[in-house]
Length: 406
Image 1 (cartoon, helix red, strand yellow):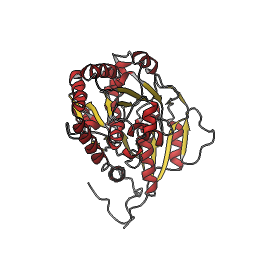
Image 2: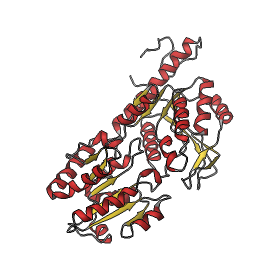
Image 3: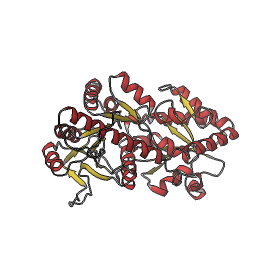
Image 4: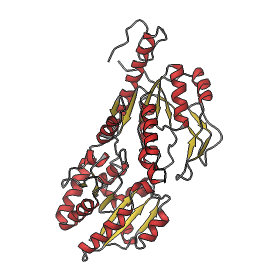
């Protein structure tokens, strides 16, 4: 028997066409659920370029500029608007992806109406704060985030290392929801010799690639130190750093790395061609909850050098399909990159193994898991309402049948 479809409300500060890991993930998850017949309602701040009109499944709220993220908005508290909307058309379950004023007002409204809430831990804001001159805030942010997520029925985290870290800090009811990759789009077959030539590189030269937001929390100073060390260790190898993305640190990085190629923001097939035209992927970030770009690089056939956490810890076997360093050990990170250049055959083998592994990490399984988590939250909410003496029928339970426990 086919399970009934759900009315799922997604609350988030960011969503496609914005470019960041959270927006990419939420776009994928919402589309996957739509294809399974669910109704997806989106609640988010109005962003630059949004049309004034909004349909029944999109609610655009007012917002404030988000510091350090030009073009994005921090959602304004909208509790009364959400209460009115959800009293008219009650969702079965909320998925709150961001913990700002908009997410908080959605949580409060849902709790008042008895709607099931699942939250997602997508961004390490408590780690970011010290990078933006707010060193006193991490403890307060951790306290708030713990309070917020512990008031939901479940918090979905993208990696095992993130779950362990949050458990250590007192977060409750955590469940793993990893990420997938489109291995048809991100594919070594998209390698472009014309693009490499535009970078000034031949077929035997080394393109060191970095893709991501160019911001303080990404530890991008290590890119220059790594490049300098590799050039000293391998003076006979011609190599160049290729940087894809944009952000507040771009100008500073361009000054530090005058011979690097800065490609700006790339999307779709153009982004896939940039990945596939590289050879090694340098990912020095220490603040990721996952790091979608790691899987995209592996699917594109690149040898990834990263710290042993988040997506890298989950998907890379050191020396087999990538190279890892202990978190924060810069010398080990540089040594890992150097090891990949010692032997051309070893680099080729690692790249083949990376592609083979990533090609098995599709989104379909992630969609199934996400749907199951949302259904389970609906069931547990129905049990809670029954325990309080409320007789409203649950969307997953037919009248006259008992609600399953689990």
